[in-house]
Image 1 (cartoon, rainbow, N blue to C red):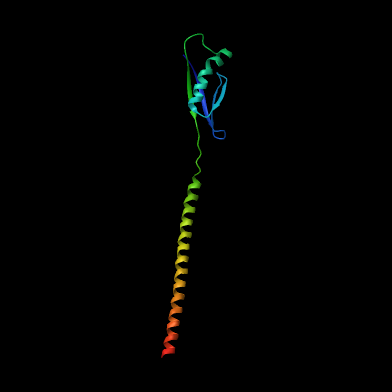
Image 2: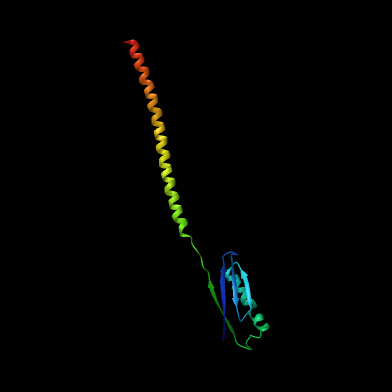
Amino acid sequence: MTEYMIKLIWDDEASVWIATNDDIPVAMENGSLDALAVKVKSMATAMLEENNGLPSSGEIQLRFNAERIERLAIYEREMDIDIQEKSEELMTDLQFLAYKESRDKLEASLRKEIDLLQSRCTSLC
């Protein structure tokens, strides 16, 4: 039995699988790996006949070898963590400022009350 290796490569930019083989002049693409395999199987014998590569009898075997490389940007996670930490720091700072502002307003209000009471006390005494 003659075996043909069909190389399936993921094209990240086009978001498709590409099938290639030197013996079966095939260069097809599809978004689905399974759909591409079906497409190659349906055209393999016709392509081999056109290129005088089809055995006279028996079977041929198609071996599909898929390769997909994914790149992950690790720095983004570190940046996300840094951004989250900075956000938490800012939130803490804002909470502190809100607390301080609220405390300052309360203190000013209490000073006015004390001053008012002292002036009443002075006028009564």
